[in-house]
Image (cartoon, rainbow, N blue to C red; front, top):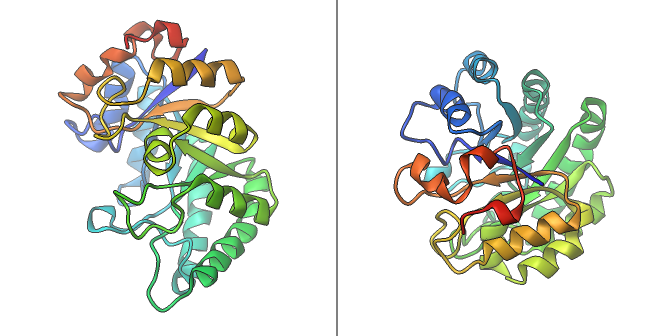
Length: 269
């Protein structure tokens, strides 16, 4: 059975952020994730998680102002020390929240730097992070973003993220398999997933091209999720989409009684 989580930075935005933990639990979910929490009061984040009784699967390091176009700082030599301090803060918060992994966006291409200089910065930062990740028993995910929605982003194909993972050479660095972005970048979802399974740390779902809930676009989610289930993948599948209708209405494809764990056959797709 696949285990599900809901991204409360993208969904349940009808409610204040701290309230979303409880709203996720009331909707039947036992796990959540979110984008960078560092704009919020971290004590209140921890308290909201504890009060709701949900698991935190992962969260992002500081990605900057995403609404204004920022997509992280992993590739920015000028923010190397900032990224590393924030990674340490993220490890400390992950311990408090009981999170199992962290996601860090690679960043947008920077004028004045070659692509290789940016990739070198990413590799250096990731190698620096590995001992801390090992000590904490945590993983860091690298995410591919599609170039249609994110035209300046550094990593727009899974092969680029995998090349970086191989270069760093640690199983503490994994691939975040966001089905929406992978479909937009390259397609071939099922065979690609099978080939990359040993390196995949997390799965996120949204339909394409609108980035709404499964069942609203071109992806055969029953088939894709069945293949993921059959593969033996043991991580979470997280809902990360812009809902058509209210968030609660958009959850209808995933039966309420199955929102903690479901087979592909359970889905209303």
